[in-house]
Length: 315
Image 1 (cartoon, rainbow, N blue to C red):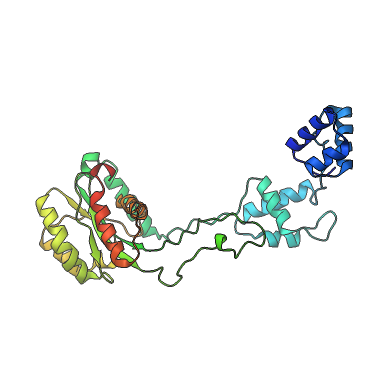
Image 2: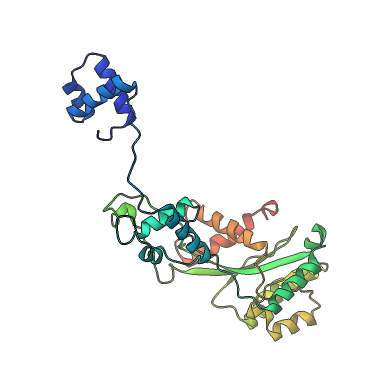
């Protein structure tokens, strides 16, 4: 019997019980007359309108082959389904399909996902990480409140989000409703900014034109913004990552001459800087504006304005 939705089956049964002819019921639910007859006969025999249990399509792999597929992909997590399909004979065919391999892996709880990319760490890197953690593990909340966390971030006019999905039918790939316009070269422009936050304080948001090198970091950020801020709060400690512009000798000498305390930051360490959450908040506030920025100049102005609108409780 062709697949008829459950609500139509119940509707057809009600029509039949109400005295309608079989042909009229078939015309009302848009199906064949024989389908309605089989539906009535099934209800008389079983008292139900649901399909009888079916054996389904026979499996093309044996339980032993299912275990082999699961074990092979557990031993080699990067093994492709097509490779396993080529070397696995089927019960009816010389080989099985790659989709069959994926189905067996899904039954075993294994799904294809993008691997997490991690840093290449040497023994020295691991030792420095451990030493940093042991040194700061007993820091209290009051200790972390005295750290000025700083960083740079780049904001683009158009954001490339690989997680965007569109629901479409077959042959709708190039329809206007299912396509997304995006400039692949430059993304329509971007703005780099610098900022610093702490538990109770915040610096100004500095818009950086062009690339940031050691000289510009010292003259455009440290001298006019960081040093006056730390002089006004002498108990604060500066934190910045190990970017080349931050670790240059001229920058280190500049900070040392002005008695600026810098929080050590191990190389290739996880980005635990809490300002990353502020960048995410700033990005969401800019994109939620009633009139989104249309060019780089408007984007820079929106970033500075929304930075000032963020309350200290949100940091």
